[in-house]
Length: 420
Image (tube, rainbow, N blue to C red; front, side):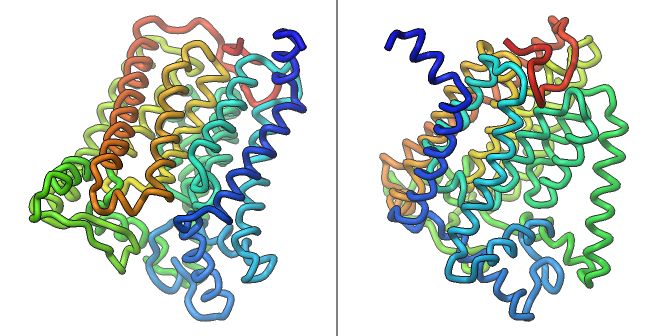
């Protein structure tokens, strides 16, 4: 087979769907059979769903919860095959949602190089990231985010709907709504839909008897300490690795995660929230500057979205491994619109996925004892995230310095402006 024939074969829809199936099957098998308890969070989801199924406690309704209220929908749906098949049902649900988003990414028209590259990148990212690519609540929000950004340029109301639903499953897609409101002209429509849907979700929750528990996830997150995988934990982990006995890793049984304890850790955890607010405000300022200088939404939306999500990860005191999935939607959109300019974020994103997988789940125990090799891997991951943020902010700034001339049109199906 010639190089050209091989390239055409790998770029066809059949090859891409085979890659989708292989990638999801491999990641699912790693989750079901890999060591290190890779699907550990699903046990917690199942317990919550079972409590509601047995008529005991409804999370987010009867008691405050760490997640927004719609997160309970996929958790409860995974009971459809019975309690003993919960993990398999969860993986099937996430795979089905991914398949819908993947089909929209490929579109019905001409399969452009940008779409092919984005599809291959997404599947490669999932394999490199491993089980957390499917086995966390964040995985449910990824297809909402991917489709939301893909249709945002031409159908901002549809995008706002999808992203708002995603934000009520896991908060992070709210950052993409923020990027959408800065980048597109029909921002008032986006705001109205986001507010109306949120009011509807809260209204239904109140009718179900939630009271203020529907907003309990806000307080639950702010009360957390400095998690061991977070960027802010890196200096303290190096101190422990160097033999410092004043800092240690402990297991918080209320939050069900490993956190750091010692001088300065509480201060870093507290300051992470103000730092996040300042960093987000700075990104907004750069984005608004670009808009006022005539930057098109087609050139601005992807890097602005990437800047927002990397800020959320870097300034986050939690730093869970599944946060890496937040990078997927912005990088996919950037690759679809301009695959050549997407090279840096695509490669850096793959590096983040691989470094995350190396730490969790297989070698996570070594990070808990601050083994220098694992702390180095975490440090490299943080460096890659900083590179992503720098690239994204620079791209947003450049969008305002040299506005793109391409029209803003939908990329949800077929060829559109900005694609190669």
